[in-house]
Length: 157
Image (cartoon, rainbow, N blue to C red; front, side):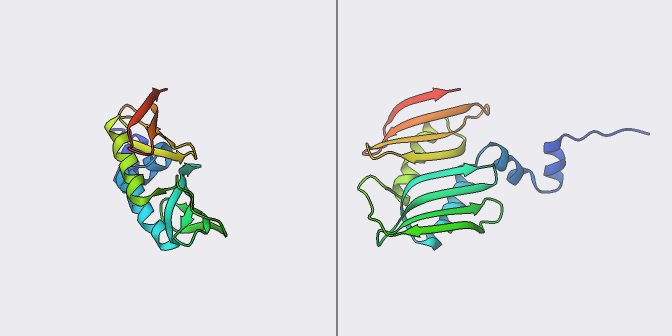
């Protein structure tokens, strides 16, 4: 009798679960993130302060609606379902990133080697930090200027 050994990745792939499982363990591809951000528009987000993968299975979003209300939403990565939603009256700061600006920042980060996304955070000073993984699954941090999305630094861990 011949014994067959499957790696976890091969087993998950055979079950159709590899993409979701890998995304949960090591960040999101730009397409996976884009799909989840499309879902975020349903909540009224127009500007973002922070987007991050938490515990491998949740996407945390912090930002603002067009009317200035501050939103915090946690979504299940696999289903897109809402886990938590909070809001409070506030004003959109000049430094919050729109959907288009988030995509420009991600494009710049991809140009520096980002393959899988973990987090994006914009500071009131105008700097953006994007963390994730490169094509060798090593951690990478990319720092950008929010005015033109130029790269100001890259750190590989």
